[in-house]
Image (cartoon, rainbow, N blue to C red; front, side):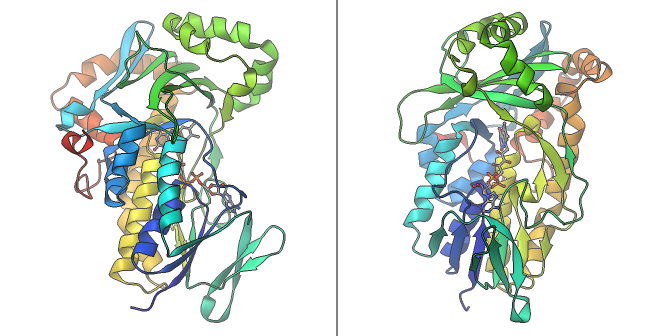
Length: 405
Ligand SMILES: Cc1cc2nc3c(=O)[nH]c(=O)nc-3n(C[C@H](O)[C@H](O)[C@H](O)COP(=O)(O)OP(=O)(O)OC[C@H]3O[C@@H](n4cnc5c(N)ncnc54)[C@H](O)[C@@H]3O)c2cc1C
């Protein structure tokens, strides 16, 4: 097999995992990142068993375990009623791990730096593609610089990628986003193995997620989040911390101790969400992975996991047939059913937890408890958040809790 020259736009979760996988097949990979110093943005996230399986295949599970916190339960209440209660134990010994983004990024990035087959092009903000003889693509930067041509380009540049901006898809901004902060772990009554949330209808939501430690640091942290409409962010800042703390305490009195860790408005970072799914996440010699191919709200907690699964599927497609004309389509085919199912479920579930609807959260509050007690429902809900619905198995080798201990 002749080694391919592959460019990957974006050193995020998907781009880093794809760079590792493809370089380990023996291909020459150039990872192109807009930041001069690649870095993770945002707070914490839950790595589901599916995403952990990919990290295990990449040999990074120990680092993730060492930094993150094992999560056994997702739990939420609305006005005293339990309206979210999912335990991974329903699936047997399968578990999830919540991490600070820097722990995930640090594990992936340091592995990429050690990988001889990957070179990093920093400070190169991709603006588009240029085609050379035989359709071979080169990357063009904002400032006119060029790199390439390559046999294959992977678009892993996230939800606002310019490389796939013209691909047919219905793109919509979601009404609600969230403000996030990392705070010191607050201790009791919070449980270091649970994501906990509180809701008032669907217009207010707050949550605490234990996320372990930043990459290479010792302090135990939690991610704290508060639902907000992005257009109200300026008003929220203008009202000041004191009044917001009162809002939080009204919704969840125990969270008062958590927001005491927020001492400056600038600690709360706004995340706006959008939703789109590319019908065909590929073109001639171009494969689109991760949020660039399918963005959604983090309600089901699947985005980083999906980016990891995409990277794994693309690596497998190239391993099976290293023809750059065919591998992108083979990758898309392998991922199609799972991506479509989860994108549809995320679009359907999000308004129950983040929207102006009165009907949907009322339905949620009324129905969740009886529905979740129906036979087999505990397994169904756990499989849904584990990311395994629509996949033949939790593969590659399922991450079992024994492996995580
Ligand atoms: C608040 C919030 C909470 C979330 N919680 C979860 C969760 O619990 N579980 C989960 O699985 N997912 C979660 N997600 C989603 C998850 O963060 C994303 O799905 C995931 O990061 C997507 O990975 P990616 O590699 O596709 O893109 P990204 O991680 O966005 O990486 C894109 C990379 O491309 C670079 N880039 C962008 N444009 C260019 C350009 N023009 N040229 C060069 N480089 C460029 C960026 O700098 C970045 O390094 C959450 C998201 C948000 C916002």
